[in-house]
Length: 474
Ligand code: FAD
Ligand code: 2HG
Ligand code: ZN
Picture 1 (cartoon, protein in one colour):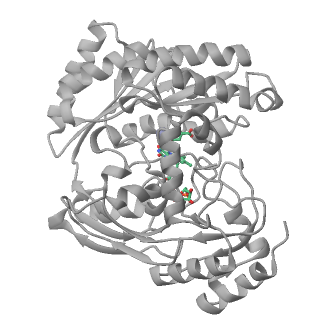
Picture 2 (picture 1 turned 135 degrees about the horizontal axis):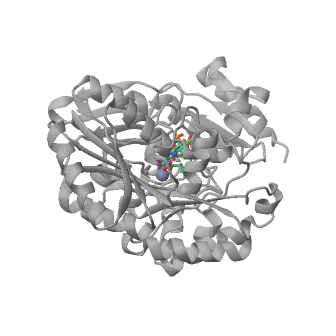
Picture 3 (picture 1 turned 180 degrees about the horizontal axis):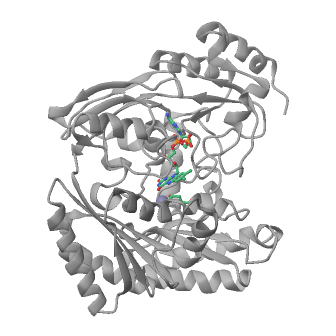
């Protein structure tokens, strides 16, 4: 679609307000118009890079006057195409990449106030520099931003102990679709003065406003860690091990990740320097980490006795404990390397699903049967956060097949997985959000009353539908 005259003038008006260098057009927008997987490529009318909340508000107002829709973008590491424009060439990408300040640290209140464009790595570093921990941990943390983490309600490996982004935010600053700034940068743990509006924006994927700042909860620094990689015969064994670990380690259980052999094979084949810790292959692996403020020896003794009991009960077939930081990093590399390694073998179908933990094994078996019927031999690259009931039930083409084998059957494969999710009372998005990929599926699988309520909220806040249309709600 060609840009209308009003839209054509918009880039000039944005330049006049923000300055030449803050507005990109033409080929300069390319890096912002595609996602990191190459799964989505759109075309932007312009990319705007405001440097302050007031400038974000000015951009939103100008876009509204011109009738241009806005796609907020942080680090562009999202999994569902929610941060890139559509192909119309009429959308404005609003990038937060010039809003990267840590605004304030209140160590006594265990709180950190930041701009939305600050990277997750930088927030972790700011917390560390003040003897604190910001526990959100993602493979993308060098690039993803706090605004993106808020907008997607990001999860990751630390959820078991600390919760999702939703649990880590005390306050927010948001530019609303009408250009007003909501200053909700409160650093309170208790505030019972009505609806908790920040929770509405957390997980809203840029459809209700632009997050420009956040007050984050931080925690005491963790000085002691114990990390163990175990071999498991089945998902059932993995789930039984979770209960055992919870009983023995309590709140010290910080992460418990599950990795199928198919996923490990990809990392061993495509990851740099990856090495199988065991001499023989096993169907499943678990990566377990305990943490505490101090007392490494105490943690190691809990790990030893827990793994000892797991051996006696035949839950684990082999185990290796990280002896130092380098070994710990190598074990985490086997887990965190899966996303990139799966990219190396062609298109992947990503299914970021959750079911009750008690249904994980039955779900995986059910989904395995269902996808096998659609494409015999389709590779199940299953891994994820077992402690949260969240599996990345990802699919790749069968060994030896070409890309068409999976692309032609993509919709049928995804429907087979989502139907299995529905049979087990699960969700089609545990942590990545709906984005463009799952907006239509959500309309089919979510409760109609819930969907209607979501649409009413959307039209109350964004009556002209200018905030990230086509994302989250179809
Ligand atoms: P973007 O990709 O830029 O945007 C994502 C969505 O948020 C879009 O809808 C966008 O419009 C919206 N948005 C971005 N910024 C704002 C803002 N300031 N205001 C309003 N809306 C905004 N995710 C997990 O949950 N758990 C994981 O373990 C995990 N691991 C990953 C590992 C790898 C290797 C990669 C590449 C990604 C991983 N992700 C994971 C996905 C991704 O990193 C997260 O979804 C992250 O929160 C996105 O942040 P971002 O800044 O890159 O957002
Ligand atoms: C992870 O847990 C991320 O590693 C990414 O959520 C999952 O690439 C994926 O599908
Ligand atoms: Zn994940």
